[in-house]
Length: 455
Image (cartoon, rainbow, N blue to C red; front, top):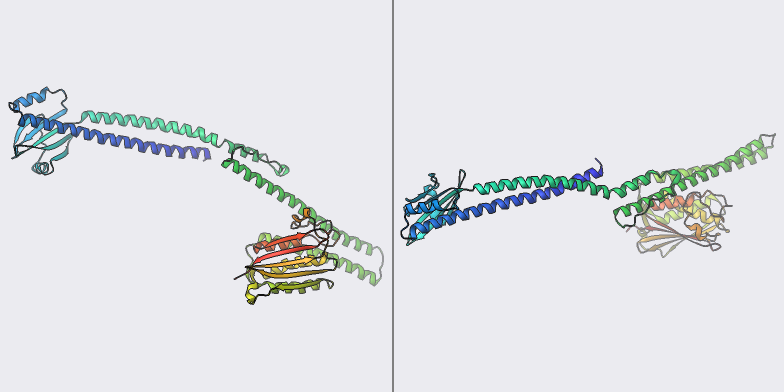
């Protein structure tokens, strides 16, 4: 079912229910008022007849019957009966049906008034006192006019309800169509967007309503999708380039070597060169696999209590084995008495990879091949600062260093693939940590990593 149809039906049901309840209330209160008014008239007729018969001299039963028949406002099947204090009938006019039983007489004398519904008649018994004697006056009639009025009212309300329901349905259909017109326009515009024109955006609404916010959200989504496509294209291009160079080198070296017989030293030199390229390819493939694994299985890594200072020391020892010229200086600022304050919740393997990439980059790009690592406890956070005296990073490149395969002009001549920092950034985001860069050309780089310490 389409939204327009569903909205129209819901609106129609809601309004129709309200109208139905209102009409039912009108009918109910009208019926109550009509009933009260009819009983009031019966009571007035009963008291009037009692006054004429009992209090007015010269009026007897025969004369009162003549007077009753002469009235022009008699009710349909009107009956008046008057009983004395011994419940003997002293006056009778109208229908021969007797409406009160002994119990009813007692109730009238006890409460002063008694209403009875008998067959089609509405009956009221009224207590009338005169000169110390109690009389019971009974008036009965059929409210034929009230029934006709109620039936006419019922017909009118039923017809009005059906007409109003039809009007509400048509109005709801028209206005829901108008309300959903911007949504239809959005759908048409979205249909025209394809991977070939991701730079196209939806026409913004001049109103700050839900549709306007929806358009803004769509445009932001399109921006993220366009960026993702751009990064994907750049990723494929960079991977192709990074794979092409070592493969080309390996192929050319082997082809040149096979052109003629070589000495053992020349063969060894070629094999070592090819082996170096293969190691580079292996490192590249491992980094790509780790990056893909992090994106795919970020919620499946086991988290335990990890001493961050121990991770830093292990990273220092490992980096030293990568290149004997690398020097890493580690320091802990104001070592806490409680060593548990140096503990974080994390995956030791991933944290080691993250800090290893950061420290290795610092050593790789620094002229003196050295890096300083400082661990500090700041309130409830552990801060690791890795600094070097390398060429630095320009401000325009700071926002891109966490993108895979991005390399600045100053580092493009140094062997690398541009995956280390993106991999570290992804690992630290999984650990709900922060990584910040402070760098400027010629002044080195400071990498600041912040992780929440366990209490």
